[in-house]
Image (cartoon, rainbow, N blue to C red; front, top):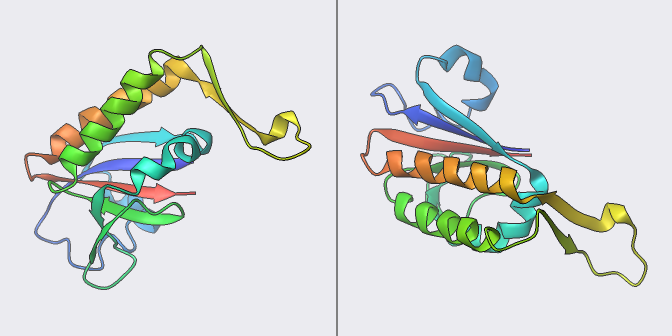
Length: 151
């Protein structure tokens, strides 16, 4: 599961704050504004486009800037990430509106089973994408971070 937390910016958030945020998230309920999860299967389906999003990596000292969401681990998005997040998730949302109720992607092997298929519900996925778009729009104000924790 990939979890996203919309978090208020505060003056007490030093360089290492987000490195340990996930472990202590219950302690910070007062600054968590919103939350959403994306299924791993959906994340894998759209992963290539997620590597284009500017972000920060709180796993390293100083939260260095990078491009691309961490598949395993943590990623931090701010106002510099907002337009890319909005554009990419809007594009996927609009594309999926044209898809079947159950979206599947075959993982190509010579022999495969149903477990080798990435399969997920279109309408639930579209709802989640709309929520990510909403959260990303909040980033534009500069008052929030979007904290991502993968698998």
